[in-house]
Length: 259
Image (cartoon, rainbow, N blue to C red; front, side):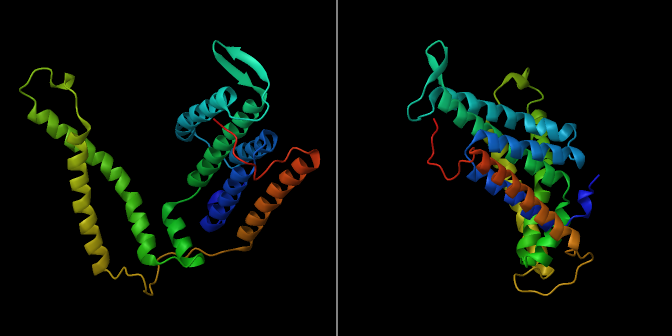
């Protein structure tokens, strides 16, 4: 099994961008199916899928299916042929092709993103971007701090809801009343603004500026295996595109045809 944890995060990010760019450029379903199958196979051999990841993919799968049937029913295509009807809705052959392409494009992007996030530590990614991509440490650690805010926002929201319940404890059936969004949004916004101000002052006090030279407790290096990983990704993608072009399937940079 390929151990993705030993691959440089920047190499994984570059490979992910290659897959995403190709997925956006390709407009035929057969090529997208091949890219999708390769992504799923790669995720299986690297053990990137678990119950949590698959649950996160469910809303994306419903969105992809929605793109499929909406384009099959209402795509604005040239010279469509009706292949089926559901009441007043007519499904066309060219609309189905557009829908299949978009469906597998969405699924491919979702699978590729899951593989990347499941095998990449945020700290290693930031250190790699600083080392390999020369990203400013001030910007890099600011991004990492923003990531850290997300779990704390959930805890803050729980505290706000608890405060609302305490204030309404004497009133009967308080939980039946509508909890308007601004009752939570405004306190949550104020709390996070205060936190952001404290974090900004702390970062400034520790010298997190744009033009600074720092030492790091951990250095992420670029190895030969990282170069091989990126080149292998490029080779597989080019092989799929070449085979699709040879078979006459490949359609790219096509004018948008959809609902």
